[in-house]
Length: 371
Ligand code: XIL
Image (cartoon, rainbow, N blue to C red; front, side, top):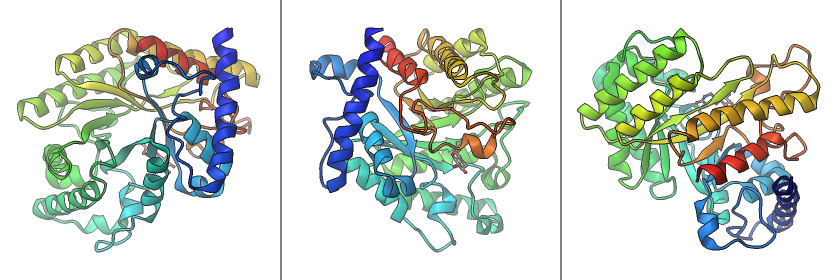
């Protein structure tokens, strides 16, 4: 296919160019902005119509691996620090803020004209042990608000969009007050969401505020319960006049789970009724139980993502498509979902040698089609 051939060749051209320029450490690569850099600059209007693509990024790899750095610059219009803005990274002790790693990512983004999503301010995960000592609701609110004022204030204008609340719902929620156990939910109950969202809006009135959630797209009673609980939670926030702009679908797809087309589309229609945007924030395909040759697996991963993106785009045009990593060289999947046959996982758009896979072409196709 013509588009496919052009996409692959141009990605490599873009990456090579970025690699050369990146070595100097001074070059601004803002012109290298499309998912695959086109050979002839398209008219501005055509380029603007693409849905922006982004990926989670790792500061250590950015510093040590120039080919990875070049690929990020060549392909991403958005990056999201994979861990560097989480509490464990920023807050080793109660009185300390460590911004070095996050700052390095922000510098890379600024140099290359890339937008940054912030992940995340209020989550159950990645909490340093000292937070267990937060005892009362008053103390919890003070810690949460102080953290948000400091972090969001520091990156005001530089982080355009925040996953303010990540994974608020219980794994299998019974109702909209079934929150995932966390220090915030245990001390503040559901009030932690309005507190976090209002504090973020106050610290950076220009930032887009996102509620990010996982396991929303599949068939089965647990996933249906999650969709229902999310809709009720969003309505409660709206009724309380809480600032919120978008819902993030993490979209960690599983090769052995079916997408519930009607269920997902109903959820998206409800989100649209509430005048909220939709973003795809952590797309990848967890392939640990997928059999077959590499080429067959790659085709199935791409086809699963295509089915998901088609289902979403028929109802809501996502404001961004972000994958949880760019290349199989750096992915969370092997740590949590290692393959029993010992073969490497292949969850992301580029393989471990930074070569585009069929998933890459699928994302490119939907960036154009949906826009
Ligand atoms: C993961 C990171 O990718 C890992 O490197 C880290 O060890 C644990 O967290 N949902 C989220 C992300 O919201 O923050 C998680 O990231 C992946 C699942």
